[in-house]
Length: 125
Image (tube, rainbow, N blue to C red; front, top):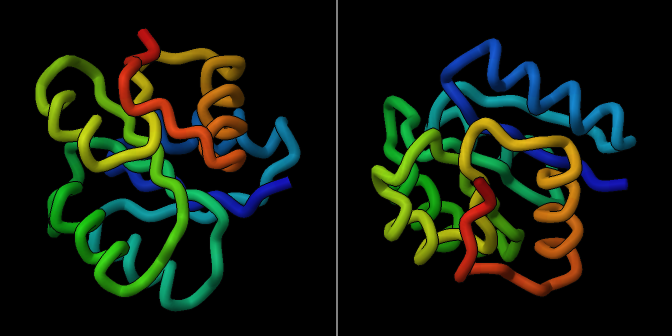
């Protein structure tokens, strides 16, 4: 299974996503903000990043630009709790999930992203 970095400043939601991923057999790292995300990537290799749209310290676009600028060629799945920023998120990520989402929807987005089949056009409700 994959090593996945989850970035979300909402501890209960981040922990819920972590639990879903662990139940699916993935290894999970966590970060609360964009800066921590980059620090985790510098410390340990990951296969995929799942990030919320609204993260503090360094916003999601700056974080994604930094990830790509540092040469990390890993898929990124965006999470949002509404349509705010969804167009930008679609442009920056390989897939996008709208909160709340199910474990099945999360798994499908992960599998497609890891298989190199980005789904930039759809938003999973």
